[in-house]
Amino acid sequence: MSNELRNFLSLSYEELEELNLNAKQQRKNRVPAHQIQEERLKYLTDEKRIKAVTVMFSDLEGRLHTLDYDKKFLVDSWDNLTFDGSSIRGFTAQRESDLRLSMDWSAFYWAPADYFGDGKVLVFGEVIDKDGSPYGADIRGVLKQYANGLFAENGYTLNAANEIEGFLFKGTDAERVYHETGKFEYVNTGGYYHSLPGDPLRTFIDTVAEVQRAMGFQNEKDHPEVAPSQFEINYTYGDVVTAADQIQLYKLICRQVANKMGFTASFLPKPVVGVNGSGMHTNVSVMKNGKNLMWDPKGEEKISKFGWQFVDRILTHGNDICLMLNASVNAYRRLDPHFEAPNQIKASATDRGSMVRIPIGNEKSSRVEVRSVGPDANPYMVLYSVFKTGLDGDTAKIKNLRTADRYLPDNVYTAIENFRAADWTTKILGADVKGRYADLKQASADRCARQLGTFVKAPEVQFHHEVYNQYLWNQF
Image 1 (tube, helix red, strand yellow):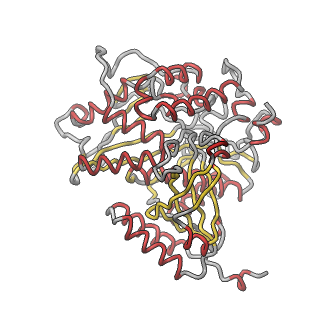
Image 2 (tube, helix red, strand yellow):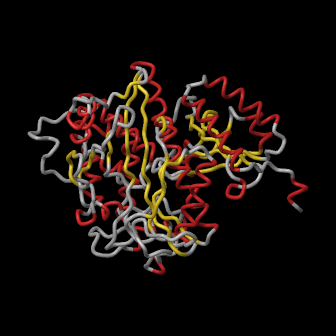
Image 3 (cartoon, helix red, strand yellow):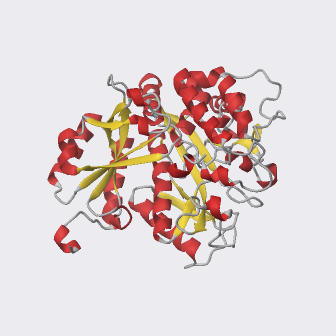
């Protein structure tokens, strides 16, 4: 059947950008949820060219899941969408499997038809427990509730911007077949900024940037990174939930574009030894009544007392939350001091080996940068743990806390032990969800060699939570 007969929605990139920026402005203006819900349902009803709505949610480890609902069915049944939670790692047991999805209508996206299909729109869902309350293992819902509570109580707006690095490898299944090939093949061997117009890496970056722009990301800069075939595509900050959603969309877009080009976009923190790994530097700030609370022109490094207290709490709990920021066996290869690795539990304006960096800023851009984050971590858990720790954590009575000679774990086993033993991680996640998360990380670790050694082992990739390889998991 020809596309002309189908008559499904397919908008120009310019039209998409306008729609997505308008939706983003509604979120920024905190338009009431019921008003946005009414507007979106009317749009779906009136727009006859939409055939399906893709509902997105993330599991406890941060892997993105999608469900396509027929548009007419969703319009009639959006408040009673059930799914089997026992099929999602880290969610419910089989005996208590029924969960529901609620629509976050403010997190609604129009996506390019050439990468997401004609006649579809995207919306993030919220996982609801059987009793109607937010589901504790849906960290997106936990983060949203926390951010809304802080705004209601203190007038705080939590903002974040993430710099997400990745690698582009030859082949559409480079990660899934790594246990057979034992290697990743670069598409470009240049390096930092070295990519000629029209070469595969530059074409990939340009295309991803175009899709992001159409989806309202408000791009800033993009370029190849230090390692061969490595990339980073930056965009502006957003409120904390939007920022986390955009991380999930960023990785989805990269994978879609790469797949269409015959490549694999990989967000393993250290897929190749001997070159720089990939990070997800996390820039955070807090606003109140339009004022950036991190800024003080007379403060040390022009950071306010509020900002330095935020930093001190992060440093105090650095080992406690390390597993939430570095969520895989492979992530601990990246924390290697030979490759600008941010593995030192200290703060600095210049030393890129510090866990926390204080970037040069002004009244608008002043912020704290947490550098020790892997790109494969659950973005909702990363931002929740960073803000929760920075605002509500303890401050250790350690002499010279910001420059003390302390280091993050160099292996996942130590990180798991620290995470399990810490009272603070129980306060962040609750005992039940904390136990589930630790058990998932332990299961991955137990499938891998205890010593990382000098080359990437097949199980590091084979049993990595972001690599969809259910068959291989069952072969262990």
